[in-house]
Image (cartoon, rainbow, N blue to C red; front, side):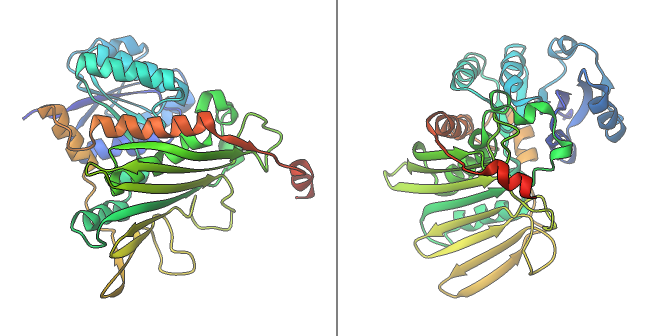
Length: 351
């Protein structure tokens, strides 16, 4: 069987490296790359020299031998590229967020129905985190009973000097809930099994960076969903850009999965003042408290996506799950209350 052939268009976020590696590790073949910015293109080609440089993306879109196009373009450009890819007969994998407006989502849904192609969003905090994958296996085997709630925390380090101008423009990245909380929306749907969901509450703020008035550095939301049997479940999400430089990770990401017979806590990147490394899972059940190191847990998203491309199946993630996770954060962003911040300028000056 010949390998799935893929190309990259749009390298604006570093997540493109993780997207590329997970496909290469699964056995796909990287054949081409296109980006207008040599500062982005050069390092990518040094890392993946097998990728042929293409000056015009139309040459990739028009190539029928390419099965999949991947992108980590500026977020507000990702949907249009994905729609073009599907209409040219390709499957598509975007970095998160896959959209910045509900109108983009509606157009992508229509194009996906018309073409039958795959529009996938790489939710890296699940697909590339071994402890989160292992938590899914435990839940499927009934380790904590029926899941009734998730709590997802997504703190990030801002690293101001590394950020391009679009990073601070809400119209371009879609807002903090649309951007970061897309991970937690995906995990809420995954672990609760909710097939329908809606936003109960959402709020955002810019507490610390008044010099960037179109930026948001804090957000949280509550969602409610229903499973196929009618059980109502809930989720809480908090995300922020406050991770201090003293932490030995870009963020202390955590996921708590509450079940009727126990709970799981995933510490994705670091166990602060505890065990070294990442991928820590804690399981509490009727038998006791257990720590599980998950460094050896396989990551199925890449192999499953390649199988879906070949067999036209939905084993990596259903299309409706992908679109519903995006819809939740877009709706949360649209209806979010903006919290006022008094004295942010004085706080920044004091530092």
